[in-house]
Image 1 (tube, rainbow, N blue to C red):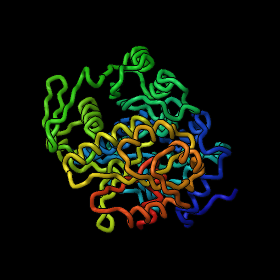
Image 2: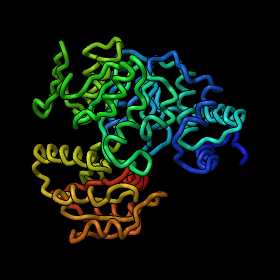
Image 3: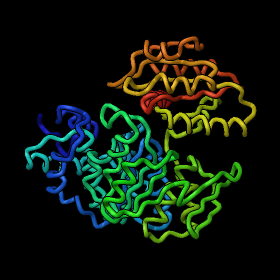
Image 4: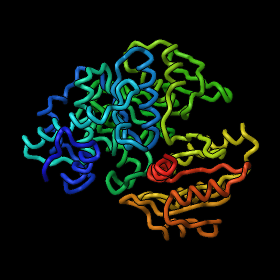
Length: 422
């Protein structure tokens, strides 16, 4: 396949990377490492913070980057997936990379992989491009979100100075294993000798993480043991660790993820003031994490939770929101999921909170068939539509002032609604 040119569009390049390699997901570092070495990006001069985990990675990395930006650092933030624009995946101190910056990086990545005689998956190529940009922009800190697992994810070609694992849940079991310990082993792959490690899960510390930290003589910080946090009221929360106790604003994200970010900042060795922490927390926002918007005078909440832990967070935030906004008595869901997620479990968690459901199949490659969603919603009030945009349009028309519209189930569900709104 002929490579696009530096004058071609970003969409042309993204389409190209979608066809270079035989599969979209191909875990392993054997192909990607020689290309990264050719690009001379495997040993950045920057401080590197790598964040793995099942849920909360996006909010944690966003908050870390926001605090460090307030502290005056030039921060490269890499996240996936994006919600609306691909550029969201690569940010320099809060600003998305331009199309041209991404295209120029893609030209370099493609040349390097051709020189090595190798193919790269979409995710591998786009991750390497992010690293090329961070190096060119001379970022002081790279904050990297692991896409899938940890040990064999392309992000793991870079040795971090701090490894953060947000939590472990049963997700991507076809790729990572079907038990918490098997998945923990994959996540623990980001740990390196003698670097600080944070485990922020609300469950007991998995043996695989403890064992890997011991093998690497890596100092381990565990949530609930080495640091604690609690809600104080609707506006403030508290964080305590060692000699540090802070009263902090709630911000826009879940405090469990804010606390993980703060623990990371304190372990990073970077110079950050309390003012930078407060400002960073207040400025940290992420699309699709209990994001509240008003559309045509209707209150719409977007949440991308797509597994048990993600839905627990959604329901907790929903409960808090309804306690503060007593005019709302019902929730109408616009809902769809991917076929490789636990649809039955997610629906069972959501059912008690949802009054009625508007559903459609997604147009994404791994979309769950409509009958799988209908079967999971057995005996629930359900309306079926051809597309998510039609389901949302109907919800907007039908919702009264006592109802909230909740768009949930998958990033792809949110993306379809955002495209409709735009």
